[in-house]
Length: 237
Image 1 (tube, rainbow, N blue to C red):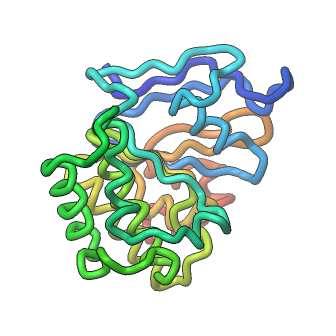
Image 2 (image 1 turned 45 degrees about the horizontal axis):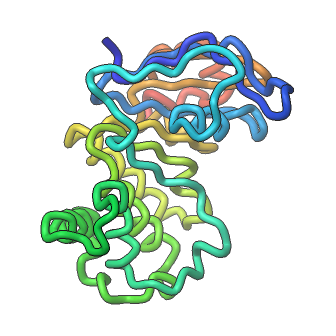
């Protein structure tokens, strides 16, 4: 059974669909990249997977024992978030809030989890630094470490390299690929189709109101739409 299955989804706002007839499945260990034009419903789909915005029709079904508290989420950053006056350590630990429940303080296991994830993402030395004083790439690593504190099985990423310079973006892609290699299932929204095809295992390409393609990156590279959007640099990059 897939770890996550979406079937015949209709998603929209105020009773108006933005996408219809969307079906796809994600197995444990997959790296699915969702691409498509602005306004095609990519972020709305992410909210449906998270249970934040129910679909107008269709189903989002978790399998293999996956529960909401095993999903980590890295949303797009806002200007306000970039200026958040907290330490990196505090930001990362906040990913354990659901685990903490009504307890007023983090326990030793949660603190250790935050330390481990900062170490994993190469920002342990920045633990006491103010988050708003970090570079864009460092902030994204802190937020990714936070998401990992929430994730046990599945990590959702909404444009994780947006606003980063090419070097920082390349490093973030490599970090995400390593997390996937370590066993974390990845679902990522990206506007960078060429890099997506290079790093992902599967591609979901959403067009205006419908899915244009879903399959492996090899199948995408060989498809008409893959050749149109990613060119010959995709799978063979």
